[in-house]
Amino acid sequence: ATNGWEIACVDRRRRVSTMARTWSMWIASMAFSMMWVCVWTYTHPTDQEALEVFLDGIDEDPRGYLSSWRGSNDACGDEWMGIECNEDGRVTVLNLHYRCDQWRCDRPVSEGGGPNELVGTISPWVGNLTELRRFHASHNRLYGPLPSTIGRLRHVFELDIDSNDLTGIIPSSFGNIEGLEELDLKYNDLEGSIPSSLGNIAKLEQVQVDHNPRMSGCIPSLSSSACVSVENTGIRRSCAPFRSVNYC
Image 1 (tube, rainbow, N blue to C red):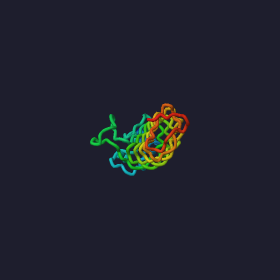
Image 2 (image 1 turned 180 degrees about the vertical axis):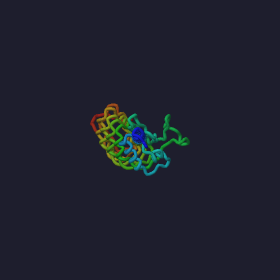
Image 3 (image 1 turned 45 degrees about the horizontal axis):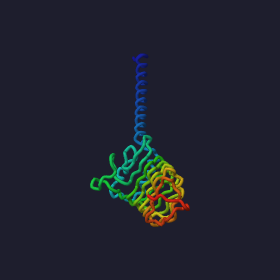
Image 4 (image 1 turned 60 degrees about the vertical axis):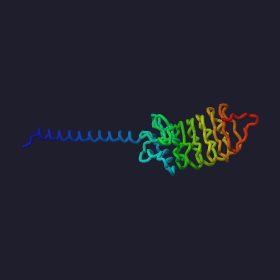
């Protein structure tokens, strides 16, 4: 016959075994959760979504520059081509101009360098990359208007989208980009005038809109340190009488 002591020992062993299984399941669950966080949240979700929507607007990528963007949902963690991020997982550089590596962005075509020749539009969602510092997309075949949401990128100091097929006007919201130093929009098909709101940007050094033959109007008052390039446009004079213009 089984005595009480033996029954108590069996019951205790069962309880210990059940507790061990419970702890093991909890530890496994926590480890999985931590792994999930590391894999899925390195890039800020707002920035990740903005880049994915931007990619949807690209019709052609003949040189495969954006191949690293496809099949991955972590721009910073998986080091997407042309993307640089800060330690908080926010995108600080969007470079669609040249194929770059750690040391250089000017490799010859024979080494995989040169313009990317991307065809598509600039998504308004790019305005959600609010920690962006540099936006380079020159020498592609981007078409359509400049999104007014670019005006949300208050920290951008280099905005370079020259040599594309952009149309429409330069949005007045660009005057909200407080950190802007260089604005390069030459060799597009823009129209209208240089927005007077650019005069609000104290750090502005260069405004290049040359070779946009449909642009017209006058040159607004800008920062005293800013120069303007308007060759082959319909822009002819300063908007302010007796104010000299500093040409680049």
